[in-house]
Length: 547
Ligand SMILES: O=C(O)[C@@H](CO)OP(=O)(O)O
Ligand SMILES: [Mn+2]
Ligand SMILES: [Mn+2]
Image 1 (cartoon, rainbow, N blue to C red):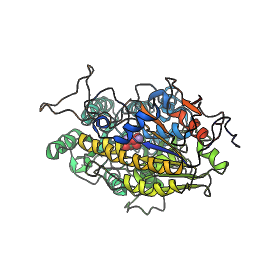
Image 2 (tube, rainbow, N blue to C red; image 1 turned 180 degrees about the vertical axis):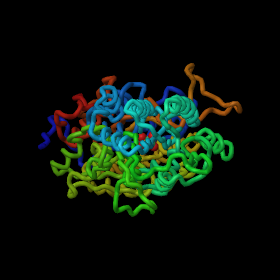
Image 3 (cartoon, rainbow, N blue to C red; image 1 turned 90 degrees about the vertical axis):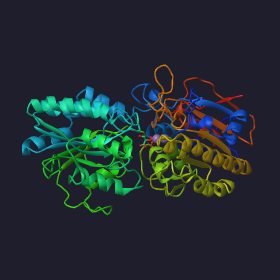
Image 4 (cartoon, protein in one colour; image 1 turned 180 degrees about the horizontal axis):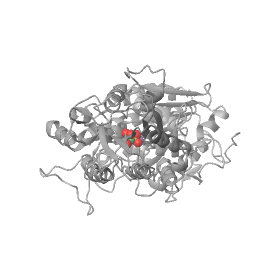
């Protein structure tokens, strides 16, 4: 793993700082673009005075099934830190389903056999949309079809409503056709019902230990059938919308009941499949089902079930123990080489993105490669309501970074500012504009520190989000509600992202390649070069060319 010196690029005296502005891309539209609307003197200066180019951050450029798939943090950080394109979870599950390998696997057969043997129930829990970031409804449907073929007679669904990877109030577009489908199953003698649910930002799908209460609410709803009762998911969604104007991702928990009894508590002897493929928001609920020692909340009577995730979510800690599809193999990411060569590294973000710059960046590994040379710093995030606090923890992150850069504590620094993404997801345009302005101030502070240290600052992003805060129709017009108000867009975008090289100690050694198809996977090679090394062969080509 020895790195070779670069033939013409020499390492600067100061650190290479890779700054990921999560969720900040370049949109072709102006209306609804919080990045364009924001006052960003520092980013503007960088664009005018430094070498920069857009990079692809979506679809096949980051290992997703098609170029219609928007980017996301998992695949974006995998591509940046891994420096190559690997077939991602969505694609691997598609293949495992289309070849039938998933159903021939030991774990599917075990879970299905368990239900048939005991005449118990098969439960599915997961994100209920076709967003393709954490899950896909096609995967769920393929599994239900197989269960039906295998003669399973009782199936329950615990649905996490999305509105964050898909349109903000689209829950019924998924629920109503699904209910029709369940009606056809019931007519055949399969008891198939939606049993519980709630918005994905209210229950079950917490990440990085930011808000365990979410998981507790989900557990009580799905497992114990505790919560406000409704006759159907449709009634729950409509009622919550009418009462409080909830958008899908924040819908409160609900339980579907008949004669006052929940229709689908999870009981000992049942099988449970958590069908999200992405790890960050799947780990905590998996631990709740699996761990004997569990300090995070009181689970009450934990049913003895066969539990499986769609994938292995954490390859270091082996969570969950049983899974249906093997996760993508991202061997030898950039930091493994840097650690093996004794190059010091600092990774920093706030809780909401902490695992992005550590776990995802290192190919879905939660540990370090070498404790002696790696520092991971987590600044605790506020809980919820990021449109109320669009500054999030950006200032605190930079407060930590400035002295670390000025003192050149580690040669390679990576930081993720969550604001453009987390505030972008709220659909609040004004808050998103403010989020970008906050981040711009931090970029200015990093520029000053990097200049002082004679280092290099690379500014980029993992995918777009705040660059499109409104939905557009096929003609490119903003979609408007009856009141004329623009329809908020809460999801990521397909847009390209910035890549800027601020190199105050420039020796005019290189220019930035203009190759059109370049994407996030070309950043790692570039970082190696700026650290004075040639990138090993496993990495995609660098963006730096000899002048
Ligand atoms: O919040 C999340 O889980 C996703 C959107 O589904 O966003 P990101 O990929 O930026 O983490
Ligand atoms: Mn992101
Ligand atoms: Mn996001």
